Image (cartoon, rainbow, N blue to C red; front, side, top):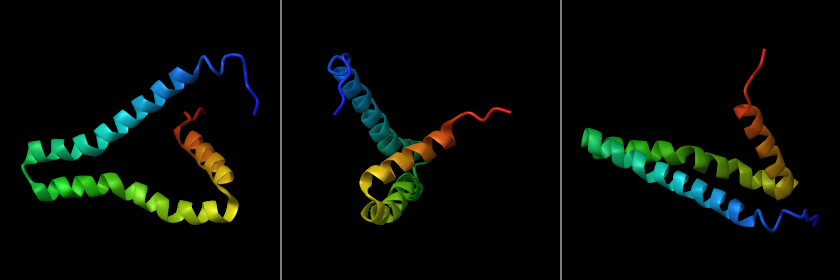
Length: 93
């Protein structure tokens, strides 16, 4: 493993960024359906909002697992990060 001089010093910042991301994800997962419940008063719409929150994650697990088994987790991880970057990167013309 290659270590840069700043790698140990940047470790707390990395943990802070990961913790912030986890908090934001948990907030979105549970706060959005709760907001739907408070706004509409409908438990059916709340369940639908919760289902729509989890559907992409469950779909991703169903095809990412076999891909990782076939090509290895590191290759799938790099490919998924590349696809995510390409999807988020601004398009210039």
